Length: 239
Image: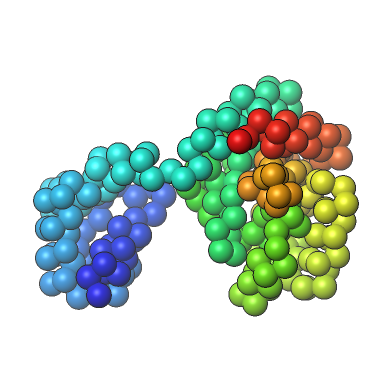
């Protein structure tokens, strides 16, 4: 199917990639080089890819489309003052994320000067069960959402990732009661986070906000009230 092949080609680009040649695109997508040459030619014509010598890179047209396609653009704009305040108050990295399938997608990140170099990036994804933002959202989502996550398997990501369904369920119950989720080296070595859900009118999570820092520098219990307050304020501010 042509649409699936185009999606595979565009999805082959990873953070840090500048330009990719036909051989590398074929290797990453599993497509024949002849198909890669033909499809990239069409994508260059449409402005979705750009030529860079014998290679291609993502085109500006993709950025333009992405700006129009942001379904949560209003959420990002509304959240920015709260994220900025949290960053100034804690000097640590602040995330805004939503759930898509079994993963969280980071909509905005405000990096703190004293924060660790985290693998998260705007538009990036991470398994929901291995993040504080993911657990905050799951705790305030329908049971069917959690069932989907559990059915996909709780893959180990960091040294302390929760891989037992029963333990995850117990944590989510506590998170529902307290309104704050914690992550201690579940997504990576030395990283700790506190997150709180951004709730819609029905009480279900639309997103989550988190503060992340080094586990030996940040006491997440101390910053969690600020995260909780920001998430509640944003929840009230959203239409």
